[in-house]
Image (cartoon, rainbow, N blue to C red):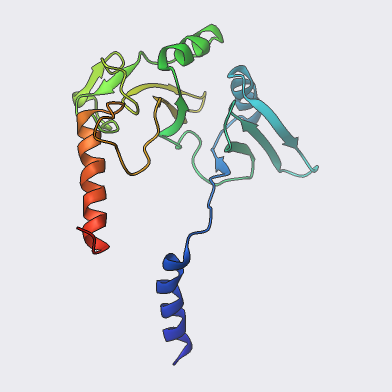
Length: 196
């Protein structure tokens, strides 16, 4: 057997043996004014982990949102991405209104809560977005947005019950649309795996 054939066989076999944990640790965000960004993320109430400047034209700042296992990094010469181009960075909250109120008290501009008429995630354009949180406060269905001074876009998403890939028949935590999508995906997986 050639090396290429052995590698292909190993790649096919690996998923059968289990998976390796992969945890999102850091998101790098592009900013134009490092000190201004540092003030903003500090004003959010995020924990400052490091502010490292070795003396040349390089600086790394890391902040971690409360309760998060993932941090954000920005600074001088840490990315070549255009400042403000990070969009759709989701922060999960258990109460969309309380999280929004906290940012307002801290002087941070944030949108009114909204939800999507489609019931699954949210559309990029506003034609399907409705004012106010999801009327039944279903998990994964309510949002609010804010931006840092460069325009990097953040989204609060309210999650009160986590999806696991399976939804019990009597579970009403999620929108009907999301419930149907999850159940259909689970049924498709069972068919692919050879289960009835």
